[in-house]
Image (cartoon, rainbow, N blue to C red; front, top):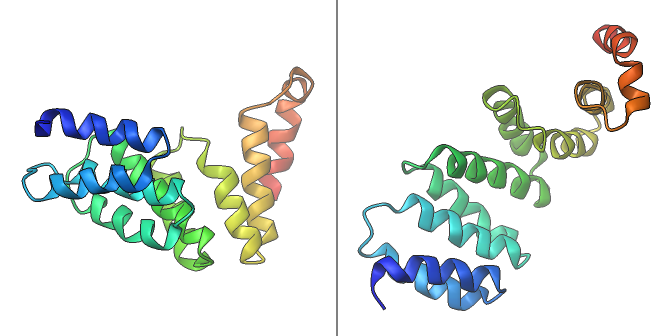
Amino acid sequence: MTDTHLFPYAIALRKNKHYSQSRKRLFSLLTTAADKGPIYLHIAWSYDNQGREAQALNFYQQALEYSLCADDEFEAAFGLACTARCLGRYAEAARHFERLVIRYPARTEIIPFYALCAVALQDTALASRLLMGLVITHPPTDAIADYQSPLVEYWRKI
């Protein structure tokens, strides 16, 4: 199998929960690939998908040391933040989440995880602000949308 076919095959293996086989192929690509960032990201995902966050963390960091497309860069940074939170490295995770919120303000999936991290750091005020902001700016129901304007005013005061 050529290198051009091996990468998609390794991704398919990971998606089908064949994590060690996927990583074996991904690691073999690192020796010859010029574009290592996406490979490191998929190795991180493989460990993460398997519940092996401690191993995933380093590979997210390595992925971010290389050039990545915009989506992969977000995924690597978000994966790093979430994995640090899962490992109980809350202060580190909070710094990552703060940077993510600033850099990717439209990526609302960051907010619940950042709020969980804030709760773990016993910063319930920050968690409340984050979640209220999410609910107000992206109302999950028409009933909340009807009250969006007054909620925004209250939210700005907390």
